Image (cartoon, rainbow, N blue to C red; front, side, top):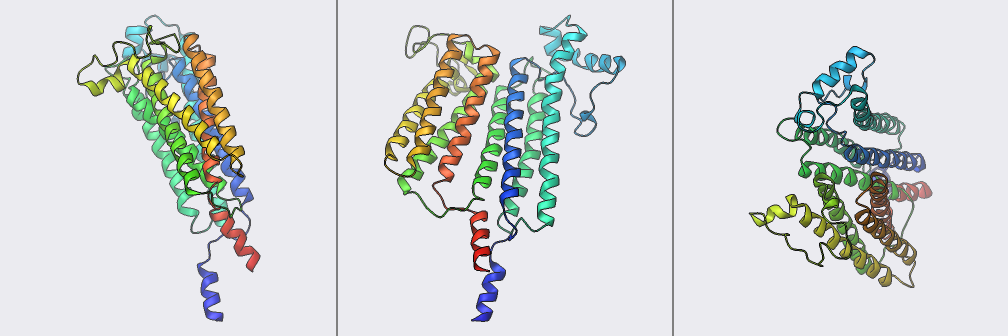
Length: 359
């Protein structure tokens, strides 16, 4: 019996030194990601994303420090179609305005990488990361590196034949950022002790709501890439109809869902309606249970986000309101992740706590 007990102890999940510091570190990284997504949104809305025409992961952290270096950066920008076809005659002062948005976005990406890697090494070395948690954290770091590459892939699409970035790549970049954020929140929430499991029907509807949110965020990326928020400025009608003319005029038909601004805005509205109904149904389904509060607050957030979306349409998408809408999407995503994770037992943290209690 002693040997069996010893073997079970060896195979038990680690660590045994407490998970609260790891959990709060992950929440801190998530907060930094939220800030970065918002700065990225401002970069897009101010048409600043093509102001830095090179990708220098290390050297690029240092901005221009004197007049000669500013002129050098400006000269590089003057070679791309965005300047030649849209911003011809831009002053150096105006260029600095868009440069700082893009530089801040890239700097935040580098800072988050360091803020993730160094504590990760320390937690690993001090025994707070066990065998189950380690690959998840390593996966987050790899996804972060991939996100940097996708970001440059997006910028590169606007440096030669286009005057802006590809809406496909912009949507991919935004969606991947939200996937990373959601995964970090999921892992962090799993480090709390929890033993209850919600009924399968609750988990299924919670997962449907989360899936719709991701789909809506992807569509939001297409809307931003095409400036599709300006395709119609009325609600609930679009150009005088619930289903406006001109949704499927491009050939082949599938192109309309990615390149027709009117169709993209229409799709964004329709998925918004579906998400609203799904969130309300999820809240109704959980009434009278311990999961009702989380589902109800999620439904309320979705409702507020829908109202902000309508306000954006009616106001012709002012920058400040578009950023509020983007922030609302992040809040809805984060709360949806927390809502679904609360319906499952704890992960690494709960196992580690149980191990401590039995020692």
